[in-house]
Length: 121
Image (tube, rainbow, N blue to C red):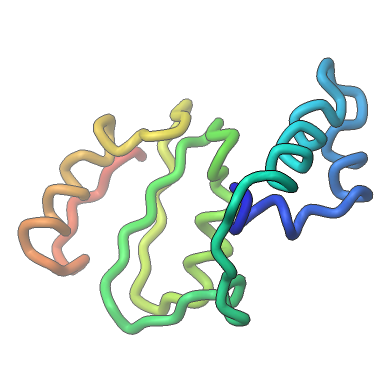
């Protein structure tokens, strides 16, 4: 958090995200205060650039994942030409054991997306 996330969040973004919530900016402010004291790595200049690769990539998002929502998976898939993105209906964070399990096992055992079963329809 202190190297990869907190340094990039602005006050305006925190205000917008926290507006109307029970905790408001509390979590953002706590992380910012902690990270001011915590030792952290220096990130490479291109750290926030999209990863690009011509490799089979299976992305799985839970429909209601608050940490890595489906929009993030779609954004990642745009720079990975061989990616497939599965959104688990009603799923949350860590949804791969559910309906996408057969697709996950296919990719892990074959190393390809070709022939991957249709799941989570």
